[in-house]
Length: 68
Image (cartoon, rainbow, N blue to C red; front, side):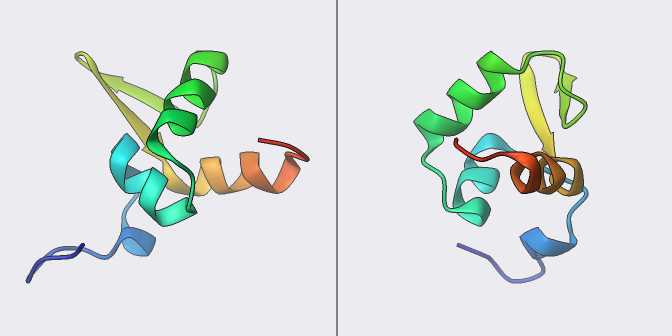
C-alpha cells in the first residue's frame, strides 16, 4: 500500500522482495524461491543482507519464463 510522497512501484528502479511480490502478483514465498534459484541473476542486487529486485530486468526475466 502506498503512502503519501512515496514513489509508485512502476517508477522505481529497484524493489524489495515484498514490493516485487505485490507489484508482480507473486507470493512472497515464491519470490524468495525465485531469488534462491537464481542467485547469480542480473535482476538481483545484494545490499548487505538485503536482496533487491531490479524491476525492469525482472520484468524481462518474467517475459522469457514459461513457468514460475
